[in-house]
Amino acid sequence: MDEMSVPLKEVDGIEIISLMDNSIDVLSTIKKDEVRQVRDWIKERKGQKWVNENFRLPIAEHGLSILIRIFHGKKAHTILFDTGRSPEGVVTNVERIGIDLSEIEAIVISHGHDDHFGGLLAVLKVVNKKNLPIIVHEDMFKTRGVAERDGTVRKDMPFPSEDMVKPAKYVKTKQPYLIADETVLVTGEIPSKTDFEKGSQRDRVLIDGEWKPYPWMWDDRAVAINIKQKGLVILSGCAHAGIINTIQHAQRITGVKKVHAVMGGFHLAGKEYEPRISQTVEKLKLVKPYLIAPSHCTGWRGIYAIAQAMPEAFIWNSVGNLYKF
Image 1 (cartoon, helix red, strand yellow):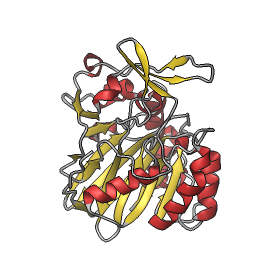
Image 2 (tube, helix red, strand yellow; image 1 turned 30 degrees about the vertical axis):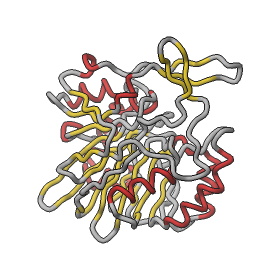
Image 3 (cartoon, one colour; image 1 turned 45 degrees about the horizontal axis):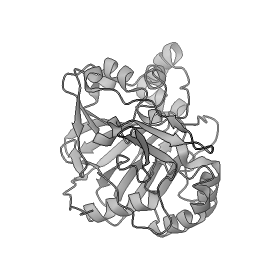
């Protein structure tokens, strides 16, 4: 696969709000000033009166959704990365913590698994914008499944059709793609370069009525933002290509080596993936991010190993967390 150089603009700063993830924790202390739990920051943003009358703790589920605000000069951009699993989970959390989704100018779906697109239709109803771009990959529309131990295939939920998302619109791309005035990079297909990240051997795609292996899951992309004097912030959906492959791909195509933060699903959970935890952790230590927040499909074993190996950088992501870089 040929890789193209992408002129990703530097930005002044970003804010990230975790709208959905596998865990919520509003009691544990957080050791970085750049990260605050929801009950802390919501009082400053909305005021005590709003909190008393409206605030409720958000919910967690096996899904991912991240709101990203980008600040570039006098301009600000807002995008949504994934929409959680359940039909109403993300919009429920948005109501509970007082987020205005109408400011969203694009939605990026990381890949075609329902724990990342399940809330899309409900989100679109709330945003209610004509021609709102939804950045996708054509493989998301294929019939997909997972091979069980007995050889049968468990069929995945189908991806919403183009008619279902109107008046929004799909933008299909395999290549790296810039949005938000060229301040946010959707990585495009992520090639396999490491010797230990081997994709998923159980994933399948239906071709001509027959289930075929789909190990590399080409539709699974990440997003990256380049902050002045800090470096890349990389957010992965599931990192089916491997989180190290994902990071290295973002570095290569942007030409930016310094990585400030890595967040999202690292897919280190399950019998197929847990054997690569130690190699992943050793490579992550070489990346030396200032902050690392593995969550969602990383699994507790992977998260625990990363926390042990990188205690100064590690953050436990909770639904409702606010990150300011």
